[in-house]
Amino acid sequence: MLQQTQVDRVLPKYHEWLGKYPTLRALADAPEDDVAKTWRPLGYNVRPRRLHAIARESVSSYGGELPSDEQTLRSFKGIGEYTAGAVLSFAFGQRKAILDTNVARVLFRIFVGAGDPKAHKMRRHLWTVSRTVLPMRHVFDFNQALMDFGATLCTARKPRCPECPMQNQCASFPYDAAGPGP
Image (tube, rainbow, N blue to C red):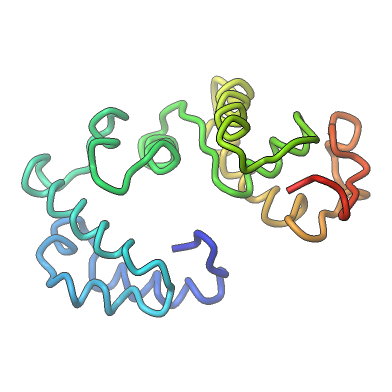
């Protein structure tokens, strides 16, 4: 729900969603149109339908639980590398890298600094960087911190470089808003 939607808009919908669908089974049993209506006005309206389908498959094939292995998770329509990594890291405590928009921006600026951060080859490279910098322990905290760092300090439009603890290691410091960065 938070992907490209502000927290203050998401919170009421998040609580409503969990009130209506506290389990995968509850979500799977709900009519798809009701699920879609509950999601509105968050946008990306294919997401509630995919979540509904994932819940139904989880109930029918996995006893109402999400699988905890990457290959099975990625076999679900709508679950790619990022979502699988996030689920495995945050829900199952596994050592898995993530690469959302905020994390990609942070890793690009700190470790790369030049080029097109949206190019396919660069995204693959940023996945490699994300896996490489991942600590052996406290992965949940590390991934959450990277996401928060990108959302609050290393922001897309007005990064707070003078306050950044990564200045000395950052390939983009000082950040030039008119330059090639993301």
